[in-house]
Length: 500
Ligand SMILES: [Zn+2]
Image (tube, rainbow, N blue to C red; front, side, top):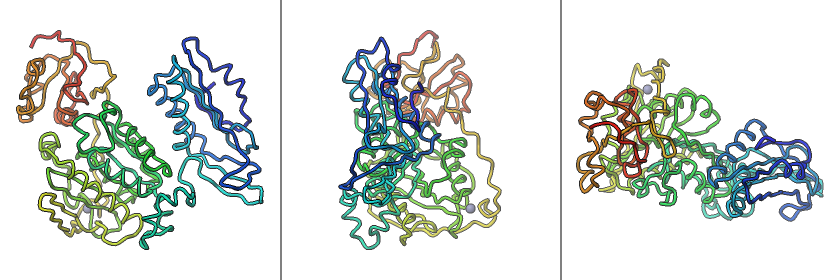
C-alpha cells in the first residue's frame, strides 16, 4: 500500500493491518477516527469530505516522512476518506511501526494532529434537522467555533476589528520568508491574532546563538529545521489556524510554485539576493510585501505594492548591494529586543494591509531607534525610469544551489575535508586548541581563501552558519569548497588527512 492515500471507498482496516507489519518492529499502534452522530450538540445523519487529492497526498506524504524521522519509526502509513461517510465509518486511519511502544504511541498521535492541522480537507455535516454546514477539517473554519470566539474575544471587542475583521483575518494567506529574529515575533503575533493560513519558509537549522532573539525556539530544538519547529510552535499557540512549513531556501523555482495564492508576504530574511528576488516576484504578482531590516539597535519597516505611489525597493536601491555591505548579526551584533520590536512592527503592518487600516507603510519607511526610543517616517516616491514603471525587471540572478555546497547536520562530509574558521579574531579568544589549529580567515581575507589554500576540499565554518553561506557566495561557489550551516562548535569530525 502507498504510505499515504485518500480513499473514496470504506476503509478495510483488517487489510491494512495485514499489510502493515515489519519483523523488526516490536510495536504497532494504529488509530481509527470514526464518524460520530453529533457535532456541537446537534445530531448528525452523515457527512461528506471534500479534498484536493494531489495536495492532500503530497502533504500527507510529507507528514509521514517527518514522522518517520522524528520518532525513528520503522514505518508509518495513513489513509483519509473522501466522499460520503455514514455514522460509524472510519474517516481516518493512522498506523505507526516502531521498535518500542512509546515511539509508536507518540508518532500515531503526532501524525493525527498534523493531519488535522495541515491537510486541505473540508467536512460537510448533514444534521438531523435537515441543515447542512461546511466545517474546516484542517484549515481555518468558516465562522468561528465557540472556543475560537473565546480565544479572540478581547481583540474582537475592538470596533476596528470586530467579528467581521476577525473572519477576514482568518481567511488571510500570509507567507513569511525567514523564521529568524524578525520572523519569529512576527509569526507568533500573526498566529495569535488569527492570521488563518500561514506559510513559513526557512532553510536554516536552529543554533544556540539564535535563541536570544528567535523566540519560537528553545535549546531542545537545536539542529532542527527552523520552519518545521516554528510551525509546530505556532499550531500549539493557536490551534484554529493552519500553518505550513517549508524547510528549504527560497529560490526562483520555489516562488514560481508557491507564491501565488498568498494575500501578503513578509520578508524577514537577512540576505540581499533573496530580498530582491522576493521583492521582484511579489511586485510582478501584485502581492503586497512588508520588508524589515535591523542593525544593532535600529530597524526599519516598509511596504511595497504596484498600486502605491510610494514606488518599489528598486526605486530606493536599483541593485542589490554587495554581500559585504551589510554586516550579519554575528559581526555587527544585535539586541534580541530590536529584532522583537521590529518584527512586531512588521506583524502590525501586515494587519494594517490585510484589514485596510490607516497608517500603512506603502508610501513611507518607518525608522526605529530602540536606544533613544525615537521613530521617524520618511516619505518615499517613484524614481523616474525605475524598472517598476518600465517593467524591465532584470532577470533573477541565479541563486546558488543549496546542495551540495551547503552542509547540514546529517550530511556526510566530503572525504578528506578540513575546516576553515572564517570568524573574526575576537570570536576565537579562549577557543579550544582544536579550533585555534584550524586555518583562519576573517572577513577581510575571505577572497584569499581559494587562492591561499589550494588543497581542497574545504569546509567554511562560522558561529552560526550564516556567514559561511555569504562567504561561499562571495567566492562564487568554487568546486571543492563547502559551507557548514551550523556552529563551528557543532561541526562533525573531519578526517584531517591533508597537510596544513
Ligand atoms: Zn521602482
